[in-house]
Length: 157
Figure 1 (cartoon, rainbow, N blue to C red):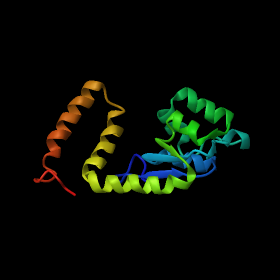
Figure 2: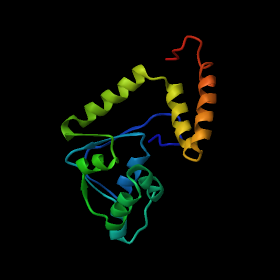
Figure 3: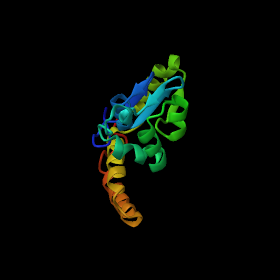
């Protein structure tokens, strides 16, 4: 799990059922894949627990406050398709194909995307969350100028 505070990009896969802490870990991945057949639940309130592992902070930022409250307060079970519709996963597909799809996506990024640029973009998104639109634009312009020094050839990988 790379998560938002780390340089690397993390592709996560929910290929089966997930509840409680198992589901709380998934939103920390940068790109998430879920099996159509998967059944997911936060489960915390049904066990007399509060949200663990930062899910009460991260889930609203991914699916919106209303949906996060629904999932956390009701602990109802949703399908992989619903999870993708909510934005909890970016990709949904049959369990039988999910691992191959996830690995193929990761390989494509590794072949074609700059590790330095991906790390900078993740950092930029985190920092921009607390900026005004103008401050985000000005910071992006500065970061763009700095990015030209990463490698003289324009391709670092």
